[in-house]
Each structure stands twice: as structure tokens, then as C-alpha cells.
Length: 164
Image (tube, rainbow, N blue to C red; front, side, top):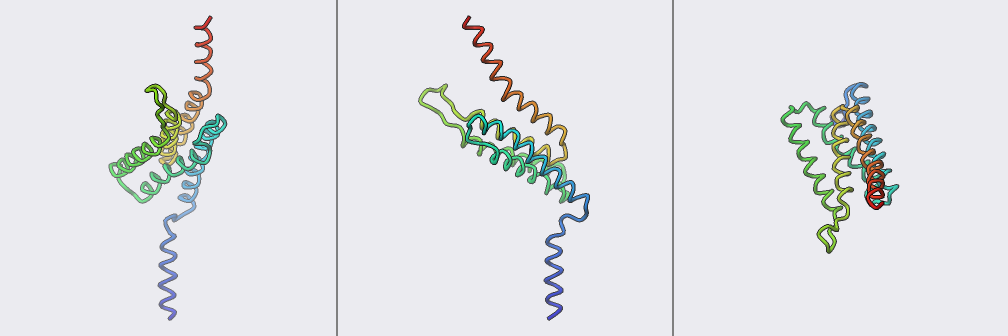
């Protein structure tokens, strides 16, 4: 009977041995937390503006995207195989974003296009964080915030000038 428990114990330990050392655990934590933080920043901006996809959605998209590339990378997949994973993430997020776009009666009456693009960009930021490209992910988040916050103000100023 002790032999059975020894096998059960060994199997249980083997199932939870994907993180072999402190370095791998630290890498996982940093990358996933970075993805969550950056996704949360973008989500906060969208939620602050009253958009449907807010903090939780953006955080989940970023962390999910990071995890989709982190795990295969840790498992030792080749760059070609990892490329296919990234392609799958991009396509899957495209479907999620498409679900947020609503077309009104007029052809120019589209709602949710910026939300869809933001979700897509948040996934890309999550992929960057998951691949260990934290600086690129941070830079992209700053650029996205500039687009979402500064550009509407610039457009308003330009339209006000045109009316004068």
C-alpha cells in the first residue's frame, strides 16, 4: 500500500514541477504582473470614459495573451512553433474585438471600433510582456495612452479652430 502512495505522491509532485527554480518563478511572476498592470492601465482609461471593456477585461486579455506565449516558451517550443501561437492569439483576440463593434443604420455609424482596437493592442502588449519584452510593452502602453487621451483633445482643438 505504501508503494501506491509513493506513486501518487511522485505523480502529484511531477504535475506541479513546471517551475523548477526561483528564477523561473520570478520570471513568471514579473511577466504576468507586468501584463496585468499594463492592461489595467489601459482598461482604467477606457472604464473612466464609460466604455464597456474596462479594467478587468483589459487585464484578462493582457494576462491571457502573456500566458499563451509564456508557457510554450518555457516548454521549449521553437520560434516557428511560438510564432503559430502568437498567430492564434492575434486571430482569437480579433474575434473578441469584433464582438464589441456595433454598426448603426448609417454606414458611418460604427460604435466600439476603438474598444476593439484597444483590446487588440492590449493583447499585443500582453504578448510583449509574456515574451520578456517589458520595455517594449511599457513604451507601447504609454503610446496607447497618448493616443487615447491626447488625440481627442488635439482633434477638439483643431475642430474649434476650423469653426472660427
